[in-house]
Image 1 (cartoon, rainbow, N blue to C red):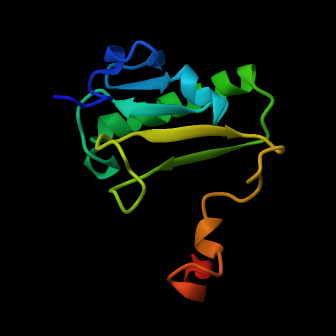
Image 2 (image 1 turned 120 degrees about the vertical axis):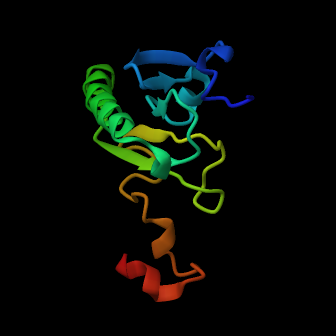
Length: 134
């Protein structure tokens, strides 16, 4: 299988920061230039999206999320987080293997304070004012 997350160590730049038997928290230094400190929690088993995770993979994901938070708080002086799953092409998922984004956020970023709902709140949104009620 030619899946980036099924073969984490195939990309020499991708680093496993810590892991459990079922999941890994990874970072890729080249992506740090765009989103400093960002990382992903990925199940080791190939599963296309978050809805296919087992109860055990959910447990390990939550455990790694708590560890990632502690790790990031030691490494950075950030003020918030964006944590989320993109699911399906329309949902923004570009790699068909479930992965949870863990992104520390900083007040001096151009989109600081916007959150993940920023784009759906815009007036040019195809769904109009209905989306602002989410």
